[in-house]
Image (cartoon, rainbow, N blue to C red; front, top):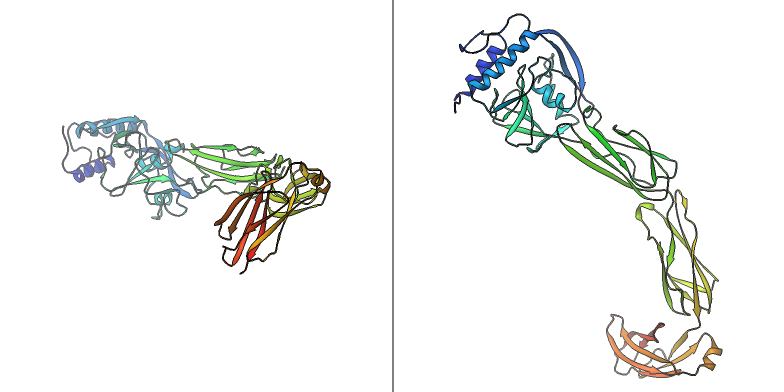
Length: 453
């Protein structure tokens, strides 16, 4: 396969010929038609993805020169036996930079130079300043390629060995990255650089509007897809860089965002937040129990931190005590036999949930006392019952599982005891604090004990 060994000579020949400095170098090359190469020229301003402006030039074509650019491009590919396929027509309307950074993403046909007409940085605004693009961007599809050792830009393709680029005024080609009129060493890859979505994640109350935004504001060919979650309603901005919703329910919600460019780059982000008032559907916990026994109750669903909710618990009648309270969870001891109503609701800045309640039937349970306390040899346990009449009429002798633990949870005694009075030996225990645990199946009672010899 024929290859030109001196790339720089190759570039010089192409440059001189393309700009009409020499009319003909190789006999078989096409002849330039002469006359102006474009019909008109006008400077313009274009906007890059994050809204910064870049200078562009609008050219109109001259047909005889377009024909020549086509022939000349075909001649170059044949001359150097390049692996390059023409995929777009020759034109003076846009060049390599215009195509790679603007036209390929849905922008209008425009010629972009590395420097503007005043000699200032122009093309580099794409990757400096607000950094619409960043490097490294990998060879994946949807990336930009900058030929850092030459004045050329391209885009990646589905085949990582190939690039797609416009060769000046010549046609648009898909080609091996080295098979083009430009030095292919030192390639730099850039990817679009959307910042995180902006928009509050605080609680969104019903009928209150909120806008979420992306900083990709000027990319005509990109598809911006917004997806609202439950409990919110779309207001405006579908397909644009600013998307507005309003609260319309109670629960955890979100807004998802995805951008897909014409060249195949995709990126997504999401914002989660709570919409509306807290939600309390029910209260979980026992429906029956005994006096002087601790019982746990909790709401369903459990507290979602995004809801920033506070919980209020109430019990009726008022013969009870809270042993523990933490938002959606409480531990309650009931002091008298009765039917109790355990109630809860949650509140945040948007309002309060409805009260939810649970009915609990509490029966008179056993009560235990220990004496003497402190003790050195033994401790006597007296058993009574909240309902004294029921205790008098009781025919079965109650039986209890009894254990003694130290404050580290180490067990020193276990056994079964029955009746309304029994003793426990403690002479073998060291001085210190202990817990006597007594249970009769459903009820469990803990009594503090001090041993002092």
